[in-house]
Length: 297
Ligand SMILES: NC(=O)c1ccc[n+]([C@@H]2O[C@H](COP(=O)([O-])OP(=O)(O)OC[C@H]3O[C@@H](n4cnc5c(N)ncnc54)[C@H](OP(=O)(O)O)[C@@H]3O)[C@@H](O)[C@H]2O)c1
Image (cartoon, rainbow, N blue to C red; front, top):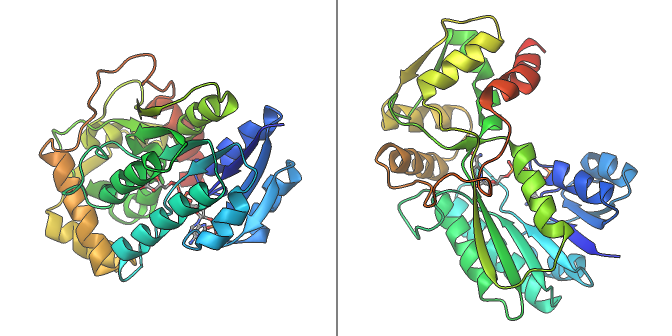
């Protein structure tokens, strides 16, 4: 039986991925920090493994005997030195894969990860791709999704408090966005059949790009506020707001750099939208099935 080790198994992407792999009859090692949060996956037949992704010995053990791994860097918004922390996790994942002699890895990377710098936290994903590609004998597929629809759930408080959506993206900039369930589905396809080899990049975007005024219109329509608008903030204001929400100064600065990258077009998909890179779920569907229920809860 194929064995896949899934890092971040309780996360937006890892959880539906782990469940889909189980549904396909694949043995899953579900990695996370809490046995309690991993319990629903254990109930679905996954093997829960509790440990820190920065610990290479934990990872070497967790990956031993696995046919493939799903590799991700968890966001730690409040970390005082997020770049050192992320680099430690990248090194531990690559070392773990090498020591355990894993043959296949699918990584959760991002649009913009083709750039080594100037892309905020996405630079860590560039590094993750590079380090995994250097592991001897490891075949890799790096998924580079656009902006997660699930990020919009973080705007619920702002909408309730101020009656509008606000952020650092310029109103005229259309971003590639996608549902995390669709990313998990793409990862499950790749991990469900390991008959591929070499190093691959797969961009993933929704059926179309969206500007933030369009996002406001779509989310607003789903929650009965059809006139919901969007206010673009300066990047200094965004960084200050993020720190107010618990981001460390370093992390807030990196997010501002990333948003600037999208605003100026530095960060963008590199291949035209095609059936292979286009996920099915639209923002309208997400707004109706996920956002509106969460807003009402
Ligand atoms: N948001 C976007 O628009 C976007 C776009 C492209 C790429 N990405 C990338 O996607 C990744 C985030 O994916 P996601 O949204 O699925 O993550 P998520 O929902 O935030 O989940 C994070 C996962 O990592 C686990 N975790 C956190 N810290 C850990 C640690 N120190 N050791 C072990 N496990 C730990 C968490 O487990 P517990 O909390 O249960 O312990 C959880 O399972 C990031 O690398 C981000 O850069 C994001």
